[in-house]
Structures are given as structure tokens and as C-alpha cells.
Image (cartoon, rainbow, N blue to C red; front, side, top):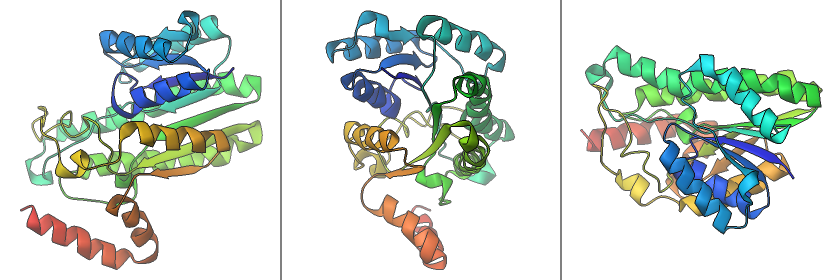
Length: 266
């Protein structure tokens, strides 16, 4: 029975992943800042067949790096091992560069990049000692394609793609797998919870997000590919995934399409 630790587990993709892994009989560690929401997700996992002792609610703020060693100790004390770590915590952005405070960029990098790296560094020694493990990070199509209103978010997601690709090359010899999850538009509250240029909450659903892939279907794809050991997991529907192919084979065409879309949004 695998022990799966999911950050950002209180909503969205993280919550859906928790439910999907619960269906597969995994032991779960659910982390995010909102303990009440984690408890709600735990109850949903119990209804799907998980046992009370197999779901550990472990509140965690990924910007509080000094707490991570004790969090890892709590997991290993409870389950003895950590088989899978999914770094899923994160926030998005909806603001133009010229209207974005530097502090907002710092927050995006702290949460979406440094928080993932800090926790991974604490978990890695556990996996190295046991000679196995699987680490994943939820990046985004925005980790491959730059788009309007998301300069900081795109920067952060590009950064984690680079870090975890490099990490994969380092830890493969130690029996540890690394996967980068690359969602397109998924129906979650990511847009509502995005930060504005002043650091406030955007509070609005993008049309692209509202019309995106069902989050539970997204989780099913991710878990299936994680179980296969897929190194880069692209998940989504329509234009968001097409953008990945265009970036690779026809980058100039993609740049023109993104610019045109940006002009329409002006």
C-alpha cells in the first residue's frame, strides 16, 4: 500500500487526486493551509473506502520552510515511509506586468517554486534511504507557454519544470522517479484564487477555466500516468494541449496566436 503525500490537497486538482488515490487504496497525507477543508477532503476519502488510520491531515504552509523537517518526521512516524510526494500547492496570477507589485512576484516564486523545492529537499533523504520513491510537481502549460496576465505565474511554472527535470537526472540512479504534471485548462478555482497586481484576490472565473476539463477526469489521467512512471504528464483538452505541440514544432505560430489573443483582451 503506497503512502501518497499531496500538498494543495484542500481543493482543485489536489483534492481530486486525493479522492482518486483513495479509490486505489493508498494511504494519504493531505496538506494545505486550511485544516477545515483538509478535514472535509478526508471525509470524502473515507466515503470512498479509505480507513481512518490511512488518512493523515497535516496542515502545511509551503512558505514556512522551517516547519518542513518536523512535518516530514510526522509523516514517517505515522506511516514509516513516503512513496509518492505530489507538490501541488500553488497560486496563479491575473495582472499585467506594468501593474504588478514586485512583492506579488516574490509571493508567486515563494509559493510556486521555493515551497516545492524546500519540501522536496526534506523528503528526498527519506526516499534515498529507502531506495525508492516518486516525486511530482504540478506545473502547467504555462510552464511551457507564456501568456498575457500571467508573467509571474509563467515564470514560476517554467522554473519548476526546469528544477524537476534537472532533479530527475540527479536521482534516477538512486531509484527515485520524477514527474512533471502539465495541466491545461482545468475546472477549478485557480482563477478565482489568483492574485492581482496589488496582491488581492482576482475572484473571477476565466472563461477558459470554466470551459476546461473536469477536475476529476484530470486526476484520473494524472494518477494513471503516475502509476506508469510517465516523466511529463500533459493533461487537458482542446487548445491548451495543442499549444504544447505548437511550442515545440511551430513556436513562431504559437507566439503570433498568443499575441493575437492578448490584443483581443486589451
